[in-house]
Amino acid sequence: MKKFKLLCLFGLIAFLPVLVGCATSFPVGGFYTKLNLPISADASVKSMKSGTVECKSILGMVATGDVSYEAAMKQAGITKINHADWDVENILGIIGIYKLTVYGE
Image 1 (cartoon, helix red, strand yellow):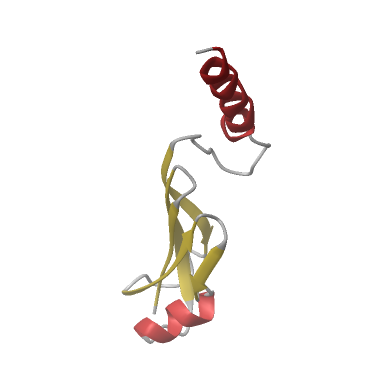
Image 2: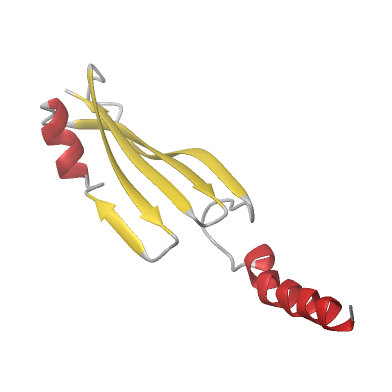
């Protein structure tokens, strides 16, 4: 029983940095994060089309995808960007889904 308590204590100490984290430019939940953040805006461009691109992260060890402005613009046939939004969903640092949506003409 004493070994079990000691093991639990070490597990808690090892998990503590996940709860505390570091300062970031956007809010981060230790267990779950789901955000929609604006990136930029240009009122002189009409927002008639939208293109969305996505990348995924697994365990913070492997990440794949192209979440560039160019990829989103190409996907929708946009030549000028009005504004862009960034969507983030991360579950326990195990699965992360990051999306960029651009709006323009």
